[in-house]
Length: 94
Image (cartoon, rainbow, N blue to C red; front, side, top):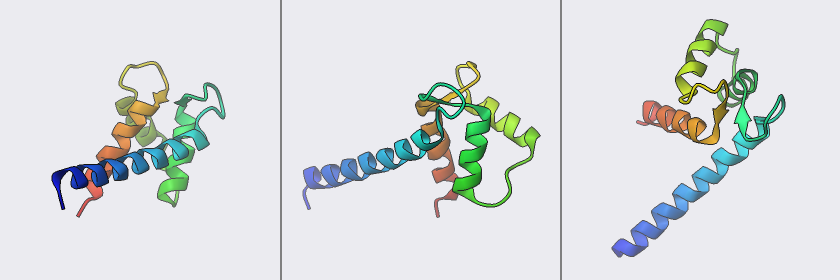
């Protein structure tokens, strides 16, 4: 395997993963407002469906949302969401 082949395969995998993240984000974004962002309620619904089980307590959601909303605009955009997903992947990686 050449370095080019390795980089090409890795980039393809990364682009596929980003595509999946985008599909999930778009499924929940815009139900209450802007289709390019998630409100706190939309993020809660996304987490509940994707992680399964009961949603976190409101205080946990508030704290989590505040951490994700990097620019403080009251919504989570796709870039902020990707940071969440990357953080979860690192925490859950073997």
